[in-house]
Image 1 (cartoon, one colour):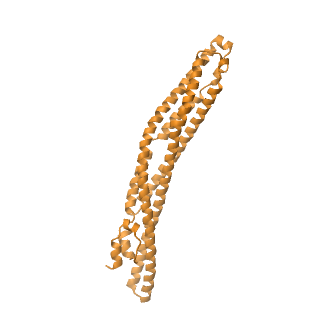
Image 2 (cartoon, rainbow, N blue to C red):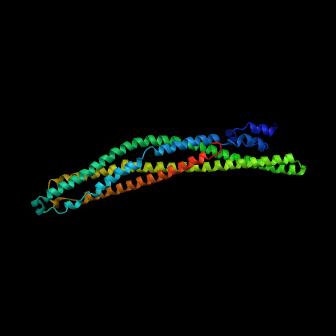
Image 3 (tube, helix red, strand yellow):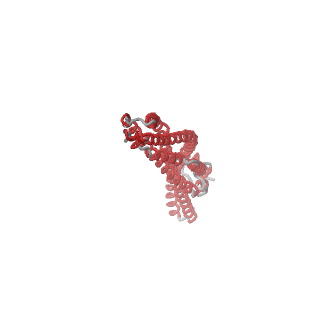
Length: 314
């Protein structure tokens, strides 16, 4: 074995990612040892991470479940009829319609309060599940990041090796043609064919690295959307809901007793009611955004899994 072949036979994928060739490499020896499994460890590890991410995203329909509760709340909010309190004069008091309208309005307020309480309980449960899910996903993303970087380094170094090999092939081709040595010419052709095998392998690994990077980006964007949704449902909406509950409960208690409409100030309750409706609409939009992004991400992860499976030697 000559010096170049001996050097190539001692190489491993990890060493290749760190070391620049100091001497001309033999394409035949290097490719025989490395082309079949270059980047193979990274492919195996990325496959495990891809499956973990896909499972974590499919593990629970967080946004779908929350959207159902938010939709129920929105329906209840839309059903609150302030017009019941607009005609409460002496005739309404005389006929008992004031008390009836007030009782109906108070019942609507109670229904909204129940919807708010149900959503609050669900959000609290979702927060705990989300914390566990995010922790697991972040660990998986870190693993993907490590393997992605190693793969990028390996592909870059492999490209440099190919460039060195092709330069050698040109020199060997010229020498073989000059000496009219058919054996040497055939060896040059065989080594050139092996180089093309490695070119194909490195192209596949480069495309895989790009897909892994896209998966990283899309997963982090999906996590950010989840965090935005949970912040809205866990802080902004409850704060407004508490204010709504204070104002509307007081109003409901007043009208259920049949008090005169002239003494009612509906401007404040109507304003806070509108504020709560806006937040609920925003929550529904955020739920839809989370669901859409996670659906697209699951599709990309499935495509990444197929891409990993298609890597030769996988």
